[in-house]
Amino acid sequence: AVNGVFVLCKSSSKSCATNNLARASKEYLPASTFKIPNAIIGLETGVIKNEHQVFKWDGKPRAMKQWERDLSLRGAIQVSAVPVFQQIAREVGEVRMQKYLKKFSYGNQNISGGIDKFWLEGQLRISAVNQVEFLESLFLNKLSASKENQLIVKEALVTEAAPEYLVHSKTGFSGVGTESNPGVAWWVGWVEKGTEVYFFAFNMDIDNENKLPLRKSIPTKIMASEGII
Image (cartoon, rainbow, N blue to C red; front, side, top):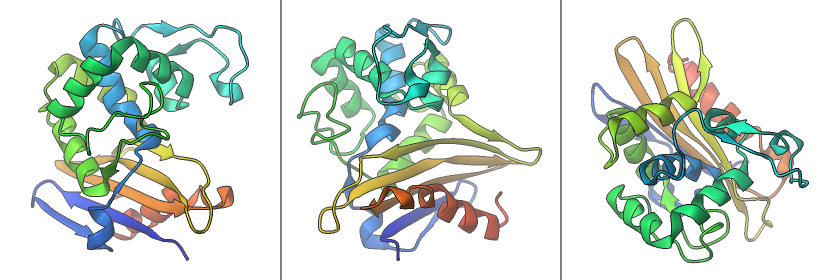
């Protein structure tokens, strides 16, 4: 059994559905879903020059082999390169980071626990409902950030381009917890299909890495059964 929640919103009817109202508004560590606001903030502050910037690998071993190379912004988001975004956060600094999370109404806006890890193991928390609200603002270019920077990040979030639909999404994983204190796994994003847009956020408790693929397979199955993808 999976303890999780799926929130699915349809833009044209401004309606949302979920399997668990209480969990939909419960806040969790965003983990790597935070790369979305982090990238926008990096661009806004000039820490990331533009979409063509290359993040050089320093040659030191990293937790994952696919992080051990020079990466573009899109590449760093796609392989979820934690060290790249930790460096971005350090250069943004606490004052500017705090200012933007407030502007974006992002979760509990609490960045304590270290400027380069507050979203991984610190105090930042966000709910599935708030993730969807944030993504909708990004989709509409309505975040307190330049339209150009929002477009750059949206482009970097494309994870599937099918003939009938386009998926923009990001996964997140706070690490495997224990049965009594599980970690959290996320998949958030939106699907553009014709003139319709579907925003989604899924999170689940995780105490075993074998369950990690479920963060995508469960919401994918639901959206397929709804005829969205």
